[in-house]
Length: 84
Length: 287
Image (cartoon, rainbow over all chains, first blue to last red; front, side):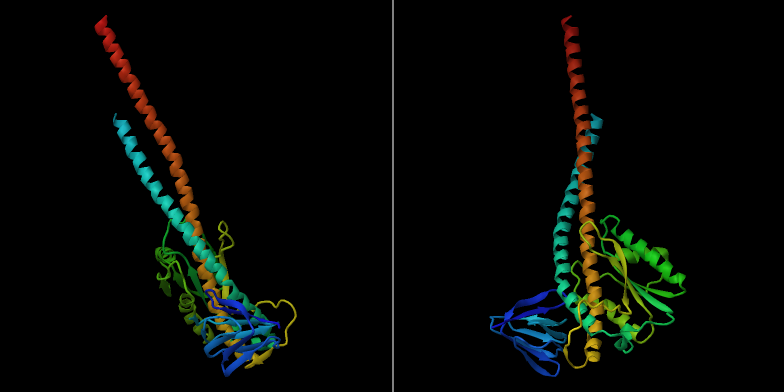
């Protein structure tokens, strides 16, 4: 099955980069789940935890920013994100 | 041997200076490496941002955003100048200040009122010397500028641009092309110049609408532009300092070679003379 390529970037560095079978992000109006093959999507993010499926990834908390999904590439772009 | 002692003193002093410049060169090299890494690390964010803005941007939307507003008759603009806090980096600051002077002349030539915001002691000192009032001055930005530093520099300017008190914001900084090329550069950060779209437009699902997303992203883009300019300036500063200190170390090496040669010649001449005197004295007694 196709995988998603996920990148979480902040202005200072790339916080996380890797593959995932599924990503759940906290959008501004509730959680959004992304599976491989998702249509191109752009949405603003709210505050919450990013859940990455299919990989042993750390928990990432974001506050604001946006999400872009294109061709199985998921980009979370945010000014305020913490890993841990 | 009065001259010999004098030379020994000079040799000692040049040796000490060389130790200092050598150390500074090594410190600058390692700081530059880290600053370069930060420049590279900042790229994915900037790329993602400009790609998305290019995708969303349309001329019709431009009318709605204060950050994209192109003032018809600009009256007042702000110039944000990024310089270093410390010297000993060759002509680095001088080049930036020269660029700033040219920019000020150009803007004032257009009949604009220009207000100056300066970061870095070197720039502040220069404008104090010129007797030009500065709107704000900052000296607290160190070798590791953060995105929060950039926000603190530009947020106020952004708010005043939105409210119409300012009609443009320019940043003068050192662009980091490579270690050897850090030309002083002027960039207009406000109004925002929308990035050109690469490739065909994609049909995105947007939530909320493009207006809301763009409204959220444009301030991010402005802050990010200033952050990038800050890290590039720091990288350029360290690169310039390394080059300057390397030149100083090389000069010290040359100078030491010359001084040691002179000293040894003087010493040898003195020994030769002493021997000649002893031989002369001995032959006088023997004779």
